[in-house]
Structures are given as structure tokens and as C-alpha cells.
Length: 224
Ligand code: ADP
Ligand code: ADP
Image (cartoon, rainbow, N blue to C red):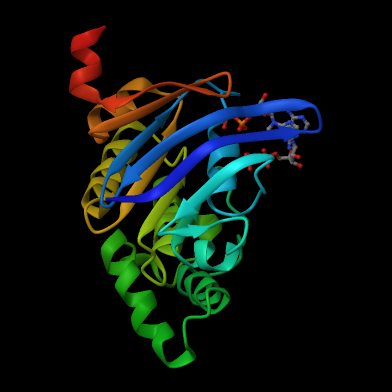
């Protein structure tokens, strides 16, 4: 059953159309690759899904809540790793995760356990006392995924999470992302085709702001 429902979604920046008439649904627990070249509209779509940008036209529902009328209900159900996350270079991993937990209104007495839970899931427990700017890019991205997992949102939206990583860090992060699917619905955006084919079962391809394909990867591979 769908947890994300996008209907005839258009978003403009002034008179420039970034995405046009997108319609698609994402089922619960799916791991969907969001593929397209730079400028295709991936970030814009993700920002509308997460409630950061209002739609110009059309509708987005997450878990049945319309993002235009119930933005807080939608935000609470989505963990988001933006392409360029806000920087807190001087915070420790623990300090940063506790800070984001507070922003997400995790109750004070539950913060410690919740931070430990997401640190365990993402494998950052051994660097909790280190400051963010001294971590490798691979660990920084794990921390980015850890903060998205705080509060256990059903949907994770990850914007180019493997960008800038070396091949080993990439493979590690992909394995982590795959381990989260099923329990979470995951949208993974990238402009790199193999990133999707080795990580996801389904792909949605965006080109110049429009959906040009949305199918299981093995079916797409057979039909082209
Ligand atoms: P992607 O994430 O696939 O690279 P974006 O969603 O960032 O694509 O961009 C889609 C289109 O919208 C591009 O043409 C981009 O230049 C434009 N765009 C994105 N953000 C803005 C903005 N804040 N103001 C004006 N145009 C923008
Ligand atoms: P990111 O997707 O990397 O988080 P944004 O799309 O939010 O970055 O863009 C960062 C800044 O640049 C924002 O202030 C945005 O308004 C601006 N911007 C991005 N793309 C364009 C564009 N094509 N034309 C004008 N401004 C843009």
C-alpha cells in the first residue's frame, strides 16, 4: 500500500519550471532510486516531499497526510538527509545527535536511548566523542543518516548520500541503506546509474523535471 502519493506535482522558481506534472506512488518499505542528471529536479522533488518547499500545483500525501494542509504531520514522518546538510563542525557526534533529537521533540528522558539506538544502527557508536569536522566523509554521512533516523520516521529521504565518497565508503553506505529498507521506506537520489542498480529494486528516472520511467530495475533492463 502506498505511503507516498504524488499527484500532478509542479514546482516553479519564479517562472522557471523545476518539476512538472509528476505523479507517482511509493509503497511501504520500498527502496526507490531517484535517478536523473544534475538539474533534473531531484532535490526540488525531495524538498516538496519533506515540506520544505510548497508545491506550485498538485498534491503530495505522506501516510495519508497532505503536505499543504498538514505539514507537521508530514515532517514528523520523514527523516531527511539533504544534499548539503547544515554544518555543526564543532559539535561532537553525540552532541549533534542529541541536539537534533531535541529539535525533533524526542522527550528529554528518551534522548540518550534514542541517540544510542540510531548510533548502533548506523555504526557510529565508536566515534560518539569525536567532533564532526574531524570525521571522514564516510562517517559524516553515517551521522547524517543517524540524524534522519531519530524518532524512527517511516520514510527516509536521502539526497545524493554517496556523493563525494571513495568506493569503499560508498559500498559501506549502500549496505547501510539497504539494511534500513523494509523497516523504512527509502528514497535515494543520485545522478549515478550504477548507484541505483546495485542498491535499489525500483527506480524513478527524472529528466528535465518530468518522470520518464518508473519501474522495477530488472523490468527496465529487459525493455531497453
Ligand atoms: P537536481 O537535484 O536533480 O540537480 P534541482 O531540483 O536542484 O535538480 O533543480 C531543478 C531545476 O530547478 C534546475 O533547473 C535548477 O537550476 C532549478 N532550481 C533549483 N533550485 C532553485 C532555486 N532556489 N531558484 C531557482 N531555480 C532553482
Ligand atoms: P541544495 O539543493 O544543494 O541544498 P539549494 O537548491 O537549496 O541547494 O540551493 C542553494 C541556494 O542557491 C539557495 O539559496 C537557492 O535558492 C539557490 N539556487 C539554487 N539553484 C538555483 C538556480 N538555478 N537559480 C537561482 N538560485 C539557485
